[in-house]
Length: 271
Image 1 (cartoon, rainbow, N blue to C red):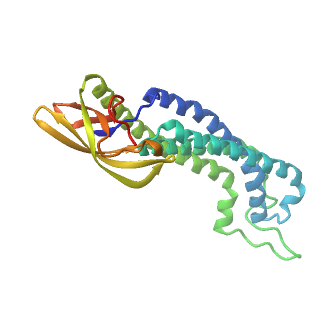
Image 2 (image 1 turned 45 degrees about the horizontal axis):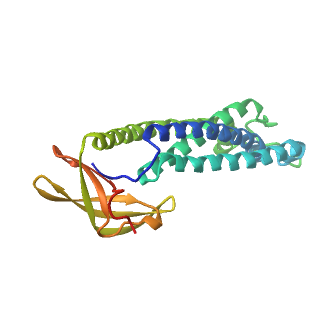
Image 3 (image 1 turned 90 degrees about the vertical axis):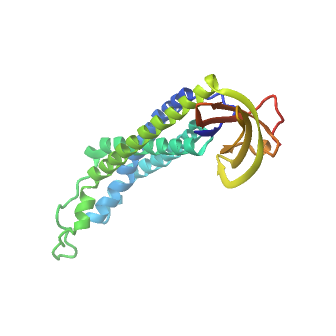
């Protein structure tokens, strides 16, 4: 395990609590968006697609109010979802967890909101056949029309399946991240601590939450001489690493792969 840590007051447990605290209102906001979007947008389009060309006429007032409510709910939900990215932590791995957690909140919210809206969908005036036009016979529904007809059930069902998949993915990622955090914490407490120096810096052209990501080579002393590890780090622009920067290295003499690199407060600062 090669890792580069930055000073951060947010421990893994605190980051997890932040995701949970943000996840609840985010899910509720997406549930409101799913409910209002189903009844304010999808319901009218569904009726027009099946057999009511003038579906907006009778329901124009309530539909307009629901569309406005839907717009507000999506705005709030999107803002909370973006906040979940920051709550996860400033690294690519944490960013991925935050993104998937936000996606889970969205899928779960749409599933809940769409499910609550099922009894309120407007039934078509004719099932299986379009309404006759100008005295002619109505055309039978196509396969697509039947899919649209069951849309009140398909929308929450598809969202629920996506939520289940994301739950499985997130559970695996959380377990992996927790194991990595435990290893890093064990190195902080019991690892051998030495001062290392950055010997090479390479910008990866990747930005994480507005901060650049670098590949750094760090040389540090061990019992048998010196070792060099290659790892990645994300820092603010004004604290970018440079050759000769002092860093704090903790390693396990029994496990060559277990190395934790962090800035050394007593060493030379980053440029």
